[in-house]
Amino acid sequence: MSNYPHIHRRRETLYFRMWVPVRMRPVLGLRELTQSLNTQSYKDALPLAYRLASEAKILFFYLDAAMSREEFQDDFDEDLLQQVIDEIATEEGIDQARLKMVAARQQAAREAKARIAKDAKIEALENENIELHRKHKKELEHAKILAELETFRKLTSNQAPSPTLPANNLTAAAQPAAKIDNAPALSIVFDEFVNQYKGKGSKHGEENKAKLNAFGGLFISYMGDKKADQLTQKDINDFFKLLVKYPGGRGGQTPAFKSMTFLERIEDAKQRGGNLIGPKTFNSSYVSSANLFFEYLALHHEELNIQLTTKHIKYDKFGGTREAGEEKQRSLKTAEVERLLNHDLMRGYLAKEKEACKYWLAMIGLFTGARVNEICQLNPKHDILKDNDSGVWFFNFTEETEGGEGVEKSHKNDSSHRKVPIHSTLLSCGFESYLHKIQSAGHDRIFNYWKPKDGKASYNAEEFFRDYLRDTELRDETLKKKVLGMHSLRSTFISHLIRRLMDKGHKKHEAAKLIQPLVGHTAGTLDENGKDVGTTLGYADTDIIEDVDNNLGDLSAIIEQLDYGVTFPSP
Image (cartoon, rainbow, N blue to C red):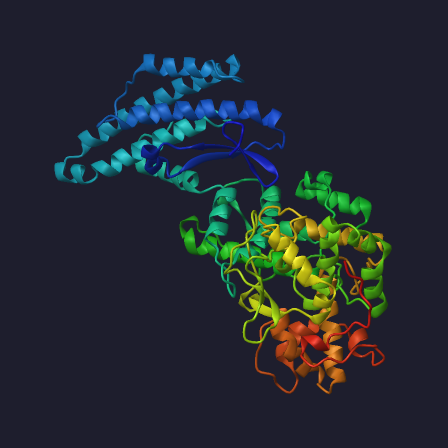
């Protein structure tokens, strides 16, 4: 909860938020009032929030008084209203000039209310058919509420209320305003969309919500928190034409960068000449998220008549200059694996029991091919086990067991839930001893050294490994052959294991199919071209697979056939 009244942070901007009293929600059509304060500074946001809160209280008071009467009258308790205004005037940050402006608008609202009530009486008297009058009475009262509400909404905005309202047709006068006012703010409907999203092909769809929120943060930053029905196709086109100029790459985002707006980041990337967003991220993270959002609007908010599409949005046609696959991380070669684990920095970590986790992070990545978050969210109490029948130690990558403190377990898809045998190299290097120590200490995460962030166990471990690659001069930013982080170890495991299986006589696609259960890729029926293992082969590095001179050992089980030809240190 925010420490400041009515101020909440949504992504990179501070917002005013105030709950609407329950009995007024059917009239307003809202659960809460929300407004962007267009600042990231609490110092600047606080007086703005106080002002909006005071105006909201006036609105609530007026509505409460109006709703308490069976019939709408021209008068209300001026003394009670003045008492509320006086109370508001004592609040911090409210200046007298603002109160005078509010009072002037209140008078305009009272005059408009009187005209509305008078016109309603005239219309009733002119209706000669009493039964018809009774039939439409509720509709007339509803129209009067909408008209009154429109006046007071203008009162609480930065624009003065209209001096007059059409008197000859109350329903027609109120209806257009009701349609506009009932349209939710873009941020509200987007949060609604994300909260209901379940995803396809995954248990909870949580992993895709990060992509949806990444899109929503930039999209709303650019569009502003306008009403959802004010979005146009031109807005969408303009956003994606700018997005191709947005900086790309993972990690390394400084606090200064995070504080920038969407347009400021684009300008910063232009000045620095850094890498821009690539076609894969453009399509899979942003275009696909936009398409899901627009489908949701059309299906669940059809009353807004929003018709937006992304079918014509193509990376190259919108000005994108990057090529597909430029961000692919390659496998480490044998000499690089040697450098990774035998560098003086790593030996220094091994000399300190507290920092041994840095060694085991790299080793487990090399000998399982698991994703970094899958590794870091392992709970030594439940997820590292010895099979009673076979005596084989294994990692149980699953969401079904309890995560450690601060960890929200997640996996990419159903195939990611798997059991992976622990390679004998890990055991010979002392992993069983490491496991016993952390279990005895009561640890509920395999690496308690790194604290989770926002429910993600691997956040700080990833930061460490990226820095370690740089410090050991293993980092490689060559397009399509990058070495940037832990994902390169996944590619390394797959490439070297496929190479060993090929040495045993398996064809490339057969070898890829054999290791699918180990790496959490979807298994299928193998055709003569091996198309079903395309995902697995996409990680494999042809430099490794086609290098017949690799000095790798010969083991019997699939995972035991993996041999990097490296003598690894041990704690």
